[in-house]
Length: 409
Image (cartoon, rainbow, N blue to C red; front, top):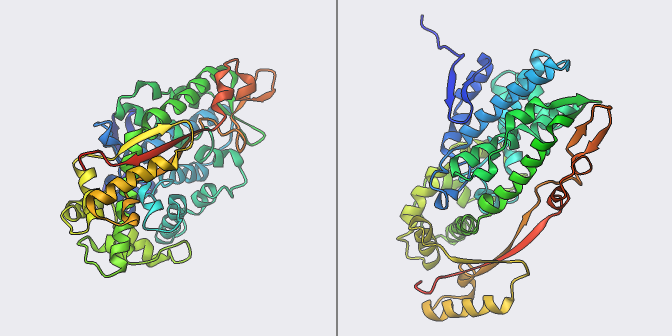
């Protein structure tokens, strides 16, 4: 009787060959919940700015697992005891850390579910998979929830220098073509060590950490918070919000069953149960794109125009400033739109609005990157570094934006 070869190899454009280390991880990757990540964009609508940014959460998850394998090997070489069970737990936790992302990654969290983060949904997926796999994910869940007693393992999953950031900065830099974000993740991992159960970086890695933090700052302003990406995501959030409003008053909108479920239901953390999770697992980018292609011809002025803007890449105009937006400017643009199209002030708010962008490359108040010196002393990277700009990177930078229609709308 033929059997599947479960120790397969993926050919990744960033790292080359990525191996699947055991049959449990193979079965998790093959599961429909994980395969759904092939249809979830890693960078949302950033491809409207950077045409190459079409990589998915599936790519990212495998890359994170690959880097975690390297981290485990490096730490073992330096005398850190990590059991086979713990290694498997680490690999599964990082593989599934983003499984809860909805369509276009972040837009869903701010529109058709009420304050349910992708981390919470990831945990629910992991708990459901743990039942299916007879408790095999229990250790991974403990690490993911930061409840496992060995703190450094939790830091490998989520910290200022975790495997998630080590992959997405390098991967997003590659697919966007933004060279400033190209970090040396393998060098960083080679410098990792553990002292008093905390993750540290050896002194020789200071320059690599400096590059990592500077690159993260660049990537946020140049890519993740690029003004065109910001306005595109804002439009998508408003499309889903308007769709939910229309459905609530009985207006017919054609869309997939999974999307209609979320448009017609009030979903929050309490009501997000096993049945909701099953429907969520059927929702991906394709549902949203298909819906927008239909809704662009809807009689509702708001939803039709918002959908056309994204599909035709004819977005709202956006201005980014260092100071809060003058409300008079918003009022002028809103009144012009109301008069031109005979719409209500409420409907105009879908096209004229303001917001805030915050970028903090190094969030040292909550968690520090610790540098281990040859003397045995441990210092925060800001004190260990002689680069003055690192202190600046630890301070949040806030900018303000205003969106409004172009004249030809």
